[in-house]
Length: 322
Image 1 (spheres, rainbow, N blue to C red):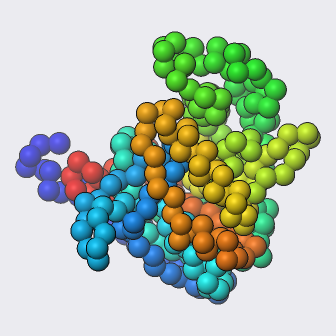
Image 2: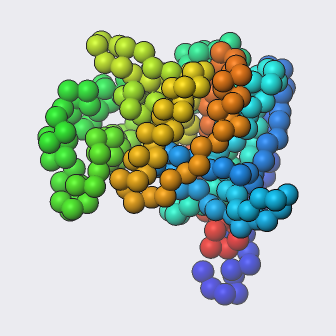
């Protein structure tokens, strides 16, 4: 990129037009199902505790408060709306992740997030399939368990392998001192990223289900074949992760315990503690309705629609041009 061309958008006029069509398609999809569109803050007082997500801190001084965070997801605020009786809702929003820039990542990206009251993860997967396959005109996804995907592509049983053997599997990508800093989930994430994900969804879209309970985040947990697993799913199309969905946890005490556990992991990783979002926890305590929710990356969905391999081709102005 030369200085003379730096002002120009990186997306073609055809990509910009397809983005507009995508937004119209999504809004029509939810209008037909009477799901309410909402808006929640992009700039808020709290970030997230998730050790794998680095938010972008803001330096705002207003209303007697200092600081703030650009949101990594609208999830907490949308759940506050659900607890207040909104019914099923969706949102198209800009979200932010610090340190992420590559062919599939930009620090700022577009997310479609929706919650369906009365749905579980299975019902919501059908919803996701309707939207994604309707837009891409592709085959409907098949379901594959996290365990089977790991066995097929990484040759490990994620529920049975010892920590020592798991670390040994990661030696092909990292130095010993780097491996020593990883916990069990960090090793599993490494295997998933390098050995499994590139092979997913190649013949047809695939939902990965049944994640280890330690990776539940905000999802409910059940025991399957003697192992606690999360009611969480991800969708892969042509090796690209498109979305992450949960049958939502409605137990405020368990949610607080998970946030506090996140902060302990952050400390072990040398990351600062994140203040817990008490307004969100109060909303869950008040009564989050039985629901399922999912966050879907609109930029990646557009990449699949247009057959591009670089997110810059679907963004008007990626970070280096913004």
